[in-house]
Length: 75
Image 1 (cartoon, rainbow, N blue to C red):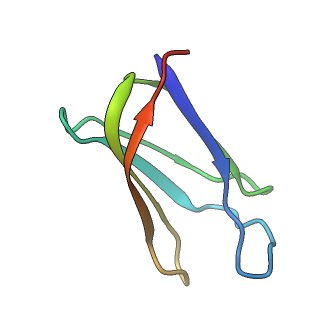
Image 2 (image 1 turned 30 degrees about the horizontal axis):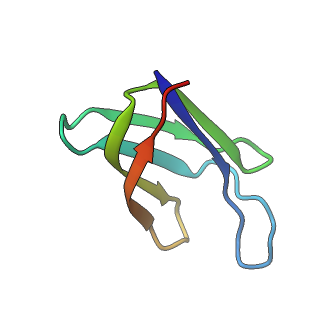
C-alpha cells in the first residue's frame, strides 16, 4: 500500500484545522478521506499504489482546491 501526507495553511501561512481531504483513485473510484488536525497536518494511509488520483481539500469559508494526476509509489 501507499499513503499521502501533507499540511494545509491559509494565505497568511497559518495552519487550517478541519479541512476535509479526499483522494479518489480514478481507475477504480475508490475514495479515501480524512480531516486536518489543529496543526493543519493530515495523513491517509493504506491507499492503492499507482494512480492517477484526484486529491481535493475543502473547508467552510475557503475555495475548494483540487490536484489531479497524482501517482503513489509503494511503501
